[in-house]
Length: 582
Figure 1 (cartoon, one colour):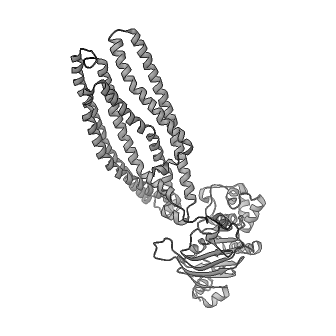
Figure 2 (cartoon, one colour):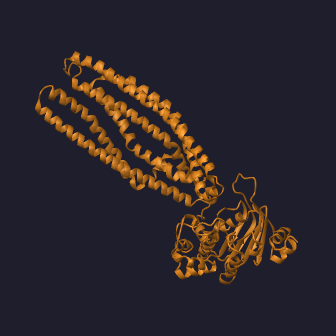
Figure 3 (cartoon, helix red, strand yellow):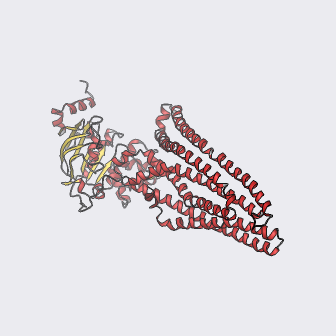
């Protein structure tokens, strides 16, 4: 897991190496300063030797400036390495998500993916920065300070043998307890993000049903859970501070008592015991040793917090797309728009007992107009999603142009299949920018022609800015029918061999719907058109009409044929006619 994440350092590896090296230099300078201070006091001030005072003072200034320079360098390199690491990690995760199939995405909720790309990565960034600085500083400061203290007085250093086990025991007991709580916190963040996304996405529904209080209550409940968990974790970790203070001041008292006796016994003669300067140095080393342990505990807490985000980010990076182009001899050209379903069955997951599609056999000639009717849950959308290979069949085969879709290069196949989905999506930007998703190189004339086919040109030109009109995020400043027509025009700009309209004219009136279908027949006769609809009028002129029922093909034929023999088609048709009740 750590090895996978470290790959994201890449071009920032030198910054990640130089930061701990500079930190080592800073620690070395800080450990040397107390020794110089002891010499300054013992051999300079006490002995009234100005030469020693001057030289040791110059050494102190040099060490302090060196420590400052190393510290600034370490912080600078650490910030570059950490921010670069988080940038690369987000890039790798986002790139991986872009290659996911629908079944891969189904494993992660959208709220969870957003949380992993934002707060989880931010936590890992802070952890990485702390690791290349504090995780180097603390143990090195502990070892060097402890070694220096022992070089002054081994007997006096035995005080640490009492303090250190107490602090280490506290860390060993507290950290596992905190880890369990933080693991719950990050899972709760997913729920919080999901509530916020649902509320913002459905804000019009919330307001129309006057459910603001209910949504606020839901948000407050989840937010309160995060608050309580954080408070619980902080209360546990707060115990670390008084234990630390107890050890620090206990050590100070012990060193003061025993050290003072040693100074008196030696008569301030370093050869006999301990000098006053060395005693003051022991106080400094005591602070450095125990504060290093305190900071080391913070490192452990940060590692504890980051363990769950680390696991969650690695889950995204480790997820292998289950739909990929063939590794060898991938087909890079679609011959025509013919479609064949050969004994196709489909499950949304390998463990699912229910089959969404069951033994579907169909042949659709290239250039045909096909209508698809069926009740809610009859798997109309599932059927057409198999054509551009958004999902793979569980059994059987889907062929486009006589070639199994699994043998195509994915980009080649999907470039020749244009889909207008049930949920029409427009992105923030101008109308032109949205349309050019279909063809980035499309000219203004091509944009207008596609919009005329989709009956969108008239309402676009009615806007003051025309095709340069800005579309808000999600297309909230255009109506549902206008959004549908813009999405149809965008799909037409691809000039695909297969065009799939998944109930994409439901928000337009019947007259506009008829005009769009007429334009399709006249302007793109060579394109195979699959129209999923709820209205019989939208498909009655189709060359083939497919009736789906409970994931199976109930009947196939033309309007007149189905009207004569299909009970399902008759019920839908007569229920939608003016005199149907007769």
